[in-house]
Length: 119
Length: 119
Image (cartoon, rainbow over all chains, first blue to last red; front, top):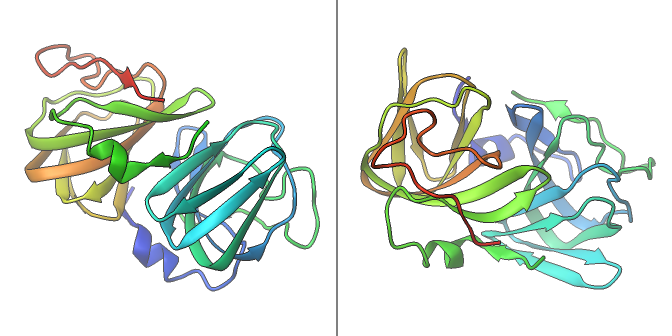
């Protein structure tokens, strides 16, 4: 495979809330996504989900706490935990999770996106 | 779990080539390591290995190519591929791989480090 330049890949993303797969490791995928506004409440019943903020800041609202992440910060949403990501200003995030995870978990709707694979 | 500030964790690492586990997702670990100089040739027979450069630059020498990674670039060393990381100047890297992977693969020696878990 070729090396991946994270900034270059981000410059190719023109839509919000549409994760693009930029690398694969075993059966896991590294995705980049641009966020702004509020996402839907959802969970992933079979897996933890990693958020790493590359640029900007975002929040992850959960039942008992809300975590605010700035550039250079990461958080692991545990398997099964309901969460709602949101960002006041545009935020760029790397996600890490198993291949096949749907961005909205069980809550399919307008925000449900294909996992476009750019590897 | 608490959020993780990558820069804060790096500031606590005072030795080269000693990965520290800063987050866990399912059975995978996110580690930070500071590199300078040459590592040993080794491979990981059961898993791919992800390198993400957080600061500085490094090279990964393999049999048929050498990849140079700068800040904001990543590379996946495929399972089984012999590789030798090296860096002229100090470089800060995030590694992602399954729990239990040894930094030197099968080549245990002076560089073999415990996976200190800071989660």
